[in-house]
Image (cartoon, rainbow, N blue to C red):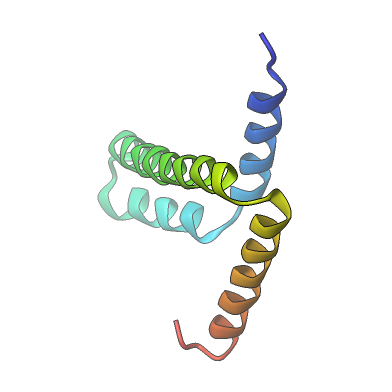
Length: 90
């Protein structure tokens, strides 16, 4: 069994999610409700669903478009979102 995709994906998502707004939101929810296990389950389910959507879209895009095109589109979306956030449009 090739564990490289599992390990590299875990490491990438783990590092990307440290200290982000999702983690801060989960901390606030745990403080607000005082039910850390319920917040943990809710946050975990949300991350699983969002990740599932990302994997499904990525799998579809990978079958339909060259990898380079996907990289350019992803980079463009990140840049556009950054600009919109800079001007507080979103």
